[in-house]
Length: 392
Image 1 (cartoon, rainbow, N blue to C red):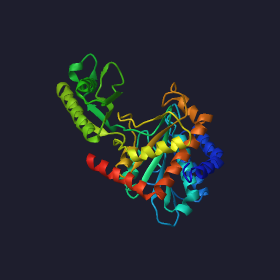
Image 2 (image 1 turned 60 degrees about the vertical axis):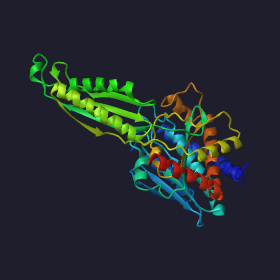
Image 3 (image 1 turned 90 degrees about the vertical axis):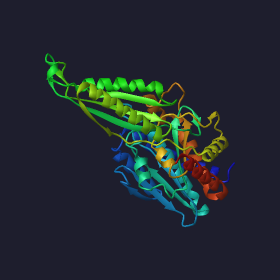
Image 4 (image 1 turned 90 degrees about the horizontal axis):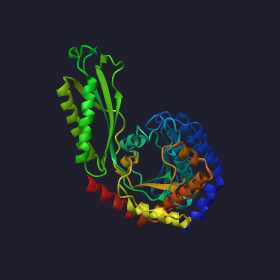
C-alpha cells in the first residue's frame, strides 16, 4: 500500500459522517446553476473550519476557493467541487456527492501537507450543467499555475475517465409579421421560418462526423392558432469531438436559417444562450494513477479510458490549462440512469457513503504521490503539454 494511503483514508473516515451530512443537506435543498449560495456557504464554512483560507463569490457569484499552503516548496494540487442541481430531479447528477469528495480529499491531503510540502486547493465550480463555472475560472487564469486538477463523478460504474464532446449552445430567433389566420398573405410567419430551419438542420445529421450530436427544441412558436406568429425561436446544442468542428457545424446551421428566412420573407438572429464547453483532454498518466489507487483500495471492475466521447462538461476548459482528471465512482446499479431522482437518492445511500470514502481517499493519495514523486508529476505535465500542443 502507498505510504500515505492508510493515513489519508483514516482521516476521511474520521470525518465521513460530517461530509455526508453536507451531502444530505444539499440533497434536501437543491440549488440550480448560479443560484447555489447556500451550498457555497456550507462548503466554504467546512473548509474554513479545517483551516483553509477561503474566498467566496470567487470569479462567479456562487464560486469559492479554499487554499492551504504548507509553507514549503512543492506543487499545487486542486480538487474540484460541483454542487449545482437539476430542475425537477434535484441532485440527479450527483454533484452534491462530488462536493463531498472534493472537500474530503482536500482536507485529507492538508493533514499531511506540512510534512510533504506544496499547496492544496479546493475549488468550488458552480453551474456545471449550464453556465460553466469552470469555464469562467479557466478564462480568468485560475488553473494556469495548478499542477493538477482532480475530481471524481458518481456513476453506475467505476472508471478512470474518458473523452467528452465540445458543446456549442446556439439560439435562433426569427422575426416576421403578425396577421389574421384567415388573411395569412398579410403576414410573414416566423414559425414557418423556424420549422424550415429545424428541418434543414435535421438534414445535416447524415453528413456529420461520427459522435456528433444535434439536440434542438422549439422554445417559442406563437401564442394563438388564429394569429400568424411574428416571433419564434429554437434552442440547440451542437456537440462534436472538437470545438473547431462544432463551430464548423454551427456555421452550417446558420446557413440553414438563412435559407429558411429567404424562403419565408423573415429575418433572424443567432446567439450563444449558455456557456460553450471545450472537449476534455485526457491525461492518461493521471488516469493510470487513479486506477492504481482504486486497486489499492480493493475496488474492482474498473473501466478503462472511454475513447469515444460521452456527454460534455465544463472541465474541458480546465484540461486545456493544466493536467486534469475526471474519474467515476460506482454508487448505484446500472439500472439507475443519470439525471434521475434515483441517482439523487443514491448519493445519500450507504453506497454513496462508501463511494465518497473511496473516491476521496483515491484523490487524496493521488495528490500526495504527485507532490512526493517529482518524476511522476513531470510525466503527467509532459503528457499534458504534448497533448495540448497537438490540439492547438
